[in-house]
Length: 238
Ligand code: ADP
Ligand code: MG
Figure (cartoon, rainbow, N blue to C red):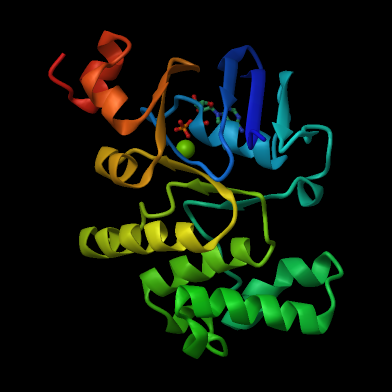
Protein backbone atom coordinates (compact mmCIF):
# COMPACT_ATOMS: atom_id res chain seq x y z
CA UNK A 1 0.00 0.00 0.00
CA UNK A 2 1.30 3.49 -0.73
CA UNK A 3 2.15 5.48 2.36
CA UNK A 4 1.48 9.18 1.81
CA UNK A 5 -0.42 10.42 -1.22
CA UNK A 6 -0.80 14.08 -2.08
CA UNK A 7 -3.29 14.92 -4.81
CA UNK A 8 -3.10 18.39 -6.35
CA UNK A 9 -2.50 20.25 -3.09
CA UNK A 10 -2.76 24.04 -3.45
CA UNK A 11 -2.35 26.86 -0.95
CA UNK A 12 -2.18 30.65 -1.02
CA UNK A 13 -1.65 33.12 1.82
CA UNK A 14 -4.04 35.85 0.84
CA UNK A 15 -3.24 36.66 -2.78
CA UNK A 16 0.20 35.03 -2.60
CA UNK A 17 0.29 31.48 -3.97
CA UNK A 18 2.62 29.20 -1.99
CA UNK A 19 1.83 25.72 -3.30
CA UNK A 20 0.39 25.10 -6.73
CA UNK A 21 -0.71 21.59 -7.61
CA UNK A 22 1.58 19.39 -5.52
CA UNK A 23 1.07 15.65 -6.09
CA UNK A 24 3.22 12.85 -4.72
CA UNK A 25 2.94 9.13 -3.93
CA UNK A 26 5.29 7.61 -1.35
CA UNK A 27 5.96 3.89 -1.10
CA UNK A 28 5.55 2.20 2.28
CA UNK A 29 8.29 3.07 4.81
CA UNK A 30 10.08 5.22 2.31
CA UNK A 31 12.49 7.98 3.43
CA UNK A 32 11.90 11.01 1.24
CA UNK A 33 13.94 14.21 1.47
CA UNK A 34 12.47 17.54 0.36
CA UNK A 35 15.12 19.80 -1.06
CA UNK A 36 14.58 23.34 -2.28
CA UNK A 37 15.34 27.00 -1.77
CA UNK A 38 13.98 28.97 1.14
CA UNK A 39 10.40 30.10 0.54
CA UNK A 40 9.55 27.26 -1.86
CA UNK A 41 6.72 26.01 0.37
CA UNK A 42 8.38 22.99 2.04
CA UNK A 43 7.37 23.87 5.60
CA UNK A 44 3.88 24.85 4.50
CA UNK A 45 3.42 21.47 2.83
CA UNK A 46 4.55 19.63 5.98
CA UNK A 47 2.19 21.73 8.10
CA UNK A 48 -0.67 20.87 5.76
CA UNK A 49 0.12 17.15 6.03
CA UNK A 50 0.29 17.43 9.84
CA UNK A 51 -2.96 19.39 9.98
CA UNK A 52 -1.44 22.58 11.38
CA UNK A 53 -2.50 24.41 8.24
CA UNK A 54 -5.35 23.80 5.81
CA UNK A 55 -4.89 23.56 2.06
CA UNK A 56 -7.14 25.53 -0.29
CA UNK A 57 -7.50 22.50 -2.52
CA UNK A 58 -6.34 18.93 -2.94
CA UNK A 59 -6.34 15.77 -0.85
CA UNK A 60 -3.97 14.11 1.61
CA UNK A 61 -4.12 10.33 2.06
CA UNK A 62 -2.11 8.14 4.44
CA UNK A 63 -2.15 4.36 4.04
CA UNK A 64 -5.45 4.41 2.21
CA UNK A 65 -7.19 6.81 4.61
CA UNK A 66 -8.04 10.36 3.68
CA UNK A 67 -6.60 12.48 6.50
CA UNK A 68 -6.92 16.11 5.41
CA UNK A 69 -10.29 16.48 7.15
CA UNK A 70 -9.07 14.90 10.41
CA UNK A 71 -7.77 16.76 13.49
CA UNK A 72 -3.95 16.67 13.78
CA UNK A 73 -3.99 14.12 16.61
CA UNK A 74 -5.91 11.57 14.57
CA UNK A 75 -3.81 11.60 11.42
CA UNK A 76 -1.08 9.13 12.36
CA UNK A 77 1.52 11.81 11.66
CA UNK A 78 4.15 13.31 13.99
CA UNK A 79 6.22 16.37 13.21
CA UNK A 80 9.64 17.45 14.47
CA UNK A 81 10.23 21.17 14.03
CA UNK A 82 13.38 23.04 13.19
CA UNK A 83 13.11 25.03 16.41
CA UNK A 84 12.20 22.12 18.64
CA UNK A 85 10.68 24.02 21.53
CA UNK A 86 10.93 21.76 24.57
CA UNK A 87 9.15 22.80 27.75
CA UNK A 88 12.01 24.15 29.89
CA UNK A 89 10.32 23.54 33.26
CA UNK A 90 9.53 19.89 32.50
CA UNK A 91 11.91 16.94 32.66
CA UNK A 92 12.86 15.04 29.53
CA UNK A 93 10.44 12.29 30.53
CA UNK A 94 7.61 14.80 30.98
CA UNK A 95 8.42 16.48 27.67
CA UNK A 96 8.14 13.15 25.89
CA UNK A 97 5.05 12.08 27.82
CA UNK A 98 3.14 15.35 27.45
CA UNK A 99 1.39 14.67 24.14
CA UNK A 100 0.43 11.17 25.23
CA UNK A 101 -1.08 12.38 28.51
CA UNK A 102 -3.19 14.85 26.56
CA UNK A 103 -4.31 12.06 24.26
CA UNK A 104 -5.43 10.02 27.29
CA UNK A 105 -2.87 7.23 26.95
CA UNK A 106 -2.62 5.15 30.15
CA UNK A 107 0.21 5.76 32.60
CA UNK A 108 1.91 2.37 32.18
CA UNK A 109 1.69 2.63 28.40
CA UNK A 110 3.26 6.10 28.51
CA UNK A 111 6.12 4.85 30.68
CA UNK A 112 6.70 1.93 28.30
CA UNK A 113 6.71 4.07 25.17
CA UNK A 114 8.93 6.80 26.62
CA UNK A 115 11.33 4.17 27.97
CA UNK A 116 11.56 2.45 24.60
CA UNK A 117 12.09 5.71 22.69
CA UNK A 118 14.74 6.79 25.20
CA UNK A 119 16.49 3.45 24.72
CA UNK A 120 16.45 3.78 20.92
CA UNK A 121 17.75 7.36 21.13
CA UNK A 122 20.23 6.54 23.91
CA UNK A 123 18.94 9.22 26.27
CA UNK A 124 17.79 6.86 29.05
CA UNK A 125 20.15 8.46 31.55
CA UNK A 126 18.77 11.95 30.76
CA UNK A 127 15.10 11.29 31.51
CA UNK A 128 14.99 13.14 34.83
CA UNK A 129 16.98 16.15 33.60
CA UNK A 130 15.55 19.44 32.38
CA UNK A 131 16.22 20.53 28.76
CA UNK A 132 18.57 23.28 30.01
CA UNK A 133 20.92 20.59 31.35
CA UNK A 134 21.25 18.88 27.95
CA UNK A 135 23.52 19.46 24.97
CA UNK A 136 22.02 20.64 21.67
CA UNK A 137 22.25 17.16 20.24
CA UNK A 138 20.51 15.63 23.24
CA UNK A 139 17.71 18.19 23.08
CA UNK A 140 17.31 17.39 19.42
CA UNK A 141 16.89 13.70 20.31
CA UNK A 142 14.26 14.54 22.88
CA UNK A 143 12.34 16.36 20.14
CA UNK A 144 12.58 13.25 17.96
CA UNK A 145 11.59 11.14 20.97
CA UNK A 146 8.45 13.19 21.40
CA UNK A 147 7.48 12.20 17.86
CA UNK A 148 8.46 8.53 18.27
CA UNK A 149 6.25 7.95 21.33
CA UNK A 150 3.20 8.87 19.25
CA UNK A 151 3.93 5.79 17.11
CA UNK A 152 3.09 7.63 13.90
CA UNK A 153 2.81 6.05 10.46
CA UNK A 154 4.64 9.06 9.04
CA UNK A 155 7.36 11.27 10.54
CA UNK A 156 7.69 14.84 9.27
CA UNK A 157 11.09 16.32 10.04
CA UNK A 158 11.46 20.01 9.18
CA UNK A 159 15.17 20.75 8.96
CA UNK A 160 15.79 18.80 12.16
CA UNK A 161 19.56 19.15 12.04
CA UNK A 162 19.86 22.79 11.04
CA UNK A 163 20.49 24.01 14.61
CA UNK A 164 23.44 21.69 15.12
CA UNK A 165 27.08 22.41 14.39
CA UNK A 166 28.80 20.59 11.54
CA UNK A 167 30.31 17.73 13.56
CA UNK A 168 27.12 17.06 15.44
CA UNK A 169 25.11 17.26 12.23
CA UNK A 170 27.25 14.54 10.73
CA UNK A 171 26.85 12.29 13.75
CA UNK A 172 23.13 12.90 14.02
CA UNK A 173 22.78 12.17 10.33
CA UNK A 174 24.19 8.71 10.97
CA UNK A 175 21.87 8.29 13.94
CA UNK A 176 18.86 9.25 11.84
CA UNK A 177 19.79 6.57 9.34
CA UNK A 178 20.01 4.00 12.15
CA UNK A 179 16.81 5.20 13.74
CA UNK A 180 15.09 4.80 10.45
CA UNK A 181 15.85 1.06 10.56
CA UNK A 182 14.15 0.76 13.94
CA UNK A 183 10.90 2.65 13.43
CA UNK A 184 8.20 1.11 11.30
CA UNK A 185 7.11 4.30 9.55
CA UNK A 186 7.64 6.47 6.50
CA UNK A 187 9.74 9.63 6.83
CA UNK A 188 9.72 12.99 5.10
CA UNK A 189 12.66 15.20 5.95
CA UNK A 190 13.00 18.78 4.75
CA UNK A 191 16.56 19.93 4.39
CA UNK A 192 18.55 22.48 2.46
CA UNK A 193 21.63 20.28 2.80
CA UNK A 194 22.10 18.24 -0.35
CA UNK A 195 24.61 15.86 1.19
CA UNK A 196 22.08 15.09 3.92
CA UNK A 197 19.40 14.38 1.33
CA UNK A 198 21.71 12.31 -0.85
CA UNK A 199 22.96 10.11 1.98
CA UNK A 200 19.71 9.56 3.87
CA UNK A 201 16.90 9.47 1.36
CA UNK A 202 15.46 6.72 -0.80
CA UNK A 203 14.05 9.45 -3.01
CA UNK A 204 14.48 13.18 -3.23
CA UNK A 205 11.75 15.70 -4.04
CA UNK A 206 13.10 18.97 -5.42
CA UNK A 207 10.76 21.91 -4.84
CA UNK A 208 10.88 25.39 -6.30
CA UNK A 209 8.41 28.00 -7.50
CA UNK A 210 5.51 26.45 -5.55
CA UNK A 211 5.83 23.12 -7.35
CA UNK A 212 7.64 19.81 -7.33
CA UNK A 213 10.34 20.08 -9.97
CA UNK A 214 11.48 16.47 -9.83
CA UNK A 215 11.08 13.29 -7.81
CA UNK A 216 13.75 10.62 -8.07
CA UNK A 217 16.45 8.61 -6.38
CA UNK A 218 19.53 10.61 -5.38
CA UNK A 219 21.28 9.10 -8.43
CA UNK A 220 18.42 10.11 -10.78
CA UNK A 221 18.36 13.64 -9.50
CA UNK A 222 22.08 14.05 -9.79
CA UNK A 223 22.65 12.22 -13.07
CA UNK A 224 19.41 13.08 -14.85
CA UNK A 225 18.11 16.43 -13.58
CA UNK A 226 14.68 17.18 -15.08
CA UNK A 227 15.45 20.81 -15.84
CA UNK A 228 18.14 23.42 -15.56
CA UNK A 229 16.91 24.54 -12.14
CA UNK A 230 17.41 21.08 -10.65
CA UNK A 231 20.77 20.75 -12.37
CA UNK A 232 21.97 24.02 -10.90
CA UNK A 233 20.46 23.32 -7.50
CA UNK A 234 22.07 19.91 -6.98
CA UNK A 235 25.22 20.96 -8.78
CA UNK A 236 25.11 18.13 -11.31
CA UNK A 237 27.30 18.34 -14.41
CA UNK A 238 24.36 18.45 -16.90
P1 ADP B 1 10.16 26.91 2.98
O1 ADP B 1 9.89 26.03 4.15
O2 ADP B 1 10.40 26.15 1.70
O3 ADP B 1 11.27 27.89 3.22
P2 ADP B 1 7.60 28.10 3.60
O4 ADP B 1 6.58 27.05 3.43
O5 ADP B 1 8.04 28.42 4.99
O6 ADP B 1 8.85 27.77 2.67
O7 ADP B 1 7.09 29.45 2.98
C1 ADP B 1 6.59 29.53 1.64
C2 ADP B 1 6.10 30.94 1.38
O8 ADP B 1 4.92 31.19 2.16
C3 ADP B 1 7.09 32.02 1.75
O9 ADP B 1 7.00 33.04 0.80
C4 ADP B 1 6.59 32.50 3.11
O10 ADP B 1 6.94 33.83 3.31
C5 ADP B 1 5.10 32.30 2.99
N1 ADP B 1 4.43 32.01 4.28
C6 ADP B 1 4.70 30.95 5.08
N2 ADP B 1 3.90 30.93 6.16
C7 ADP B 1 3.09 32.04 6.04
C8 ADP B 1 2.03 32.59 6.84
N3 ADP B 1 1.65 31.99 7.97
N4 ADP B 1 1.44 33.71 6.39
C9 ADP B 1 1.83 34.31 5.24
N5 ADP B 1 2.80 33.84 4.45
C10 ADP B 1 3.43 32.72 4.83
MG1 MG C 1 10.89 25.85 5.97
